[in-house]
Image 1 (tube, rainbow, N blue to C red):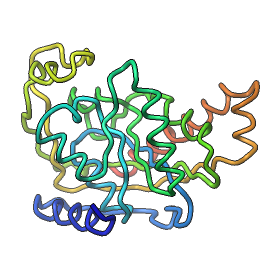
Image 2 (image 1 turned 180 degrees about the vertical axis):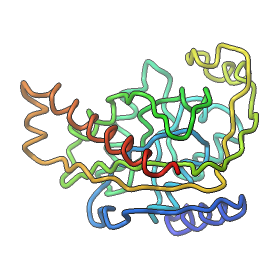
Image 3 (image 1 turned 30 degrees about the horizontal axis):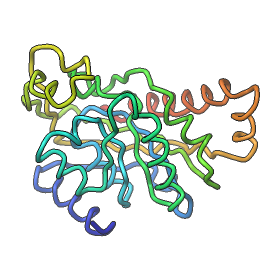
Length: 241
C-alpha cells in the first residue's frame, strides 16, 4: 500500500470512529532523516493515530500473535506492519527487518512497553517500564542521521472500553505469551478525543555509536531509553487533561 493511501485510510478510519485528534509540537518531526518512532501503547488505534498525526506511513513492529490470527494478520500487514517472530527468533528478526527499513529511510515504529498495557487495562496517564531493544537497534544500526522520536498518545478523558477476543483464544495462536494464559478478554480501547504530543528527538551521532561499541555501551543505551521514557511521561502529564 502506498504511503499516501495508508495516511488517507488512517485519517478516514479515525473520522469514521468519530475520534478527534489534536497534535502538538509538529515542528519536532524530522523531515529528511530516517526516524524511529517510540510511543506509549494502550489501544489498537495507536498505530493509526500515529500515522495520521505524523503525516507519514510508519512501519510498526507488532506482537507475534498479530501475524498468526486470521483477519488481524491481513489488516496489520496491509498497513505495512511487521509481526515479530516467535521468541527464539524474535530479536534477530526485529533487528534485521527494522534495520533494512531504516536504511531505506522509512519511518519505523516501536512500542517499548510490550504487550502488557494492551492486555491489562491501564489508565491514560500511566506508562509501563520500557524494554531496551529499540535503543540497541538505534545505536547498532548502520544508519546515518537517525532520529529517535518519542511521541505521547494521551487520551483526553473520553474513551470507550469494549471486550475483544478471549485471551485463552489468543494463547492458541501464541502459546509463548504468558499474558494470554489467564481468563478474561483482550480490552479494545477506542479514543473519542486524543492528544498526540511530539517529544524532542534523540539524534544518534557517530560519537554515540562509538560509545555503544565500547565500554560505555550500557550507559548510552540507558541514556537513550531514559530520554524517551522521560519525554513521553512528561508529555502525558500535560496531554491527559
